Image (tube, rainbow, N blue to C red; front, side):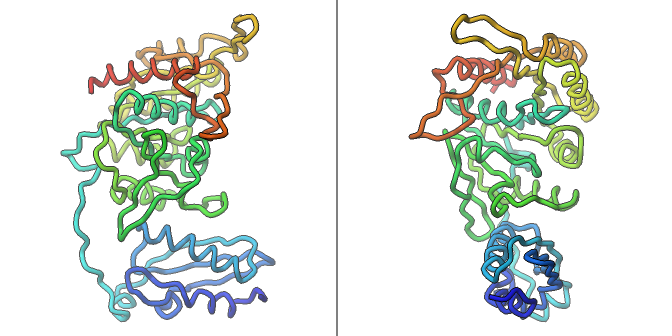
Length: 352
């Protein structure tokens, strides 16, 4: 099919605004269509944005436009004006309030896993800590809040998507851990080009629109550094606890101190430091080599007046073709045992 604006609009005729039950073409929701070679960028207006339905719609639109011959599809969303919504029979019925993770009477403990810089293994720590806590009998969820660098689904070997019923998202469960990630709502590993305010909205959805059930702990895998998402988390969750991940390298520890300083400034309790890639242990001789130096973790704990909860060596989980999860250590694995010990210490510190 020839890639023309007319063909694209015709294809979008079948896609409905979930709140108006009318085609996004008929509501005037197709605000902009730009074609540059095989690349199409669209601006779509809906009655309501920032909803689970919008995320499903996003996938649908991308798929539909690719079928007209586009190689890649860029999407921006806008909101229809009140007049437009009324004109098309809008003003959807108020939805039934469901308990939010952010409500005052919620008993879930939030643990943010942070780092000063990327590449220190923060996501690996997040998924293995969550899995170890679930093995210890706790009800655990994980939000992959690293909106641009989401990796939790791949690390845990998750290949299905959450189910959406009405306005509720049901997380995917793996190894007893309930998982939600931006990666579930992005087509074919496409880059995410959302700006700060919209990211904050996404995080709100992850807390408010997801049916988490009863959770003891919710682990938040944050982006590195102290940007928009980290600030949003600090504002949304005044009672959040934090784990800081660093490597033994002095520079990693130095920049991790900034993430720690932000936690202290916003009254978040720092549970401790986890030093990742602490050493390499030879399977043949049992000798330890300190590939990235030594002492970064200890220096960081002194600076932040906290404790070192564990030192994780360089390693790789055993590959199990039956249960594929490239970054999750089995509880029998020596590194899996270190994570079990860290999980126990975290549970004891929180006292739940």
